[in-house]
Amino acid sequence: MKILIVDDSRAMRMIVRRTLRQAGYGQHDIEEAANGLEGYEQIQSQKPDLVLCDWNMPEMTGIELLQKLKDEGHGVKFGFVTSESTDEMRSRANEAGALFLIAKPFTPDSFKGALAPHMS
Amino acid sequence: MGKELDLDFRSPAEEACAVMLGWDPMFRAVPPPLDAGAPALRGYVSICLRRGGDTRVVVAIDSPGRDAVAVARALLGAPDDEDLPPEDLRDAFGELVNVIGGNIKGMIEEAVRLSIPTVQLNRSWRQLDADLPGQLLFQMWLAHEGHHLRMTVLANTGTQTNKGQHHEDPHRR
Image (cartoon, rainbow over all chains, first blue to last red; front, side):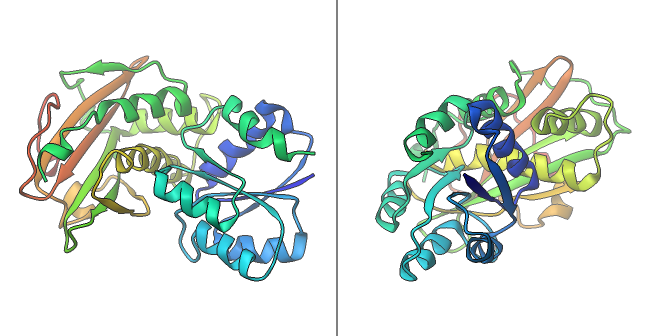
């Protein structure tokens, strides 16, 4: 599988990459994008199977990215990895088609729990 | 805006330090001795509240320079002898305060928006943001193996002081 990590923090992209490895997903092809706009361009050009996306980013937020993909009928699997996880955000994410929302700080186990159903 | 901000600000910081840094943080009510010569790394996020205007809660963290490097190394999984460029220090510190702030935002009923983190090396709080709220809601030190991290929660006038420990106006530093 090809996994795209979208986060404006290089530190967090490194942590997500490391956590994917610790959760047993290190064998997958992992790419990175630094904001929603860059993520959108990479989704178009590289066609990842799964997007792990931050919510709060400059240029284009995570929910704006997901909404844009939904409006264009793009079916890429999409989940949020975010420091905010209110009921309202979970509801918005769910309505926009997100498969899961992982709250930071996260552990390899929380990654396994969220990703396992979607990794086939 | 008083009672609703009488919150457990300590738990999000302790959880973030435990999960992201691998720290088993020891709460410090008394500030540790600081190396006055070491540059400090300071970062904060703002939580805007529903009532509009400039009503906000600010979650800030800071450390003396050598401790900030230890925080960044722990967060990035870098070895103890690796030199980290300033942008990595800022990025790591920003992500830590972003996670703590995000979790605190989830505790505040009136919260509507979390800002992008602002982090700078060797700048006073006033140089970072001249309009930081003046009321101290909470402050504590976390310590792990000789390294220290301070968390401060500020708000606009009108909020009540929380049960924080060791109140010190960060603007004076």
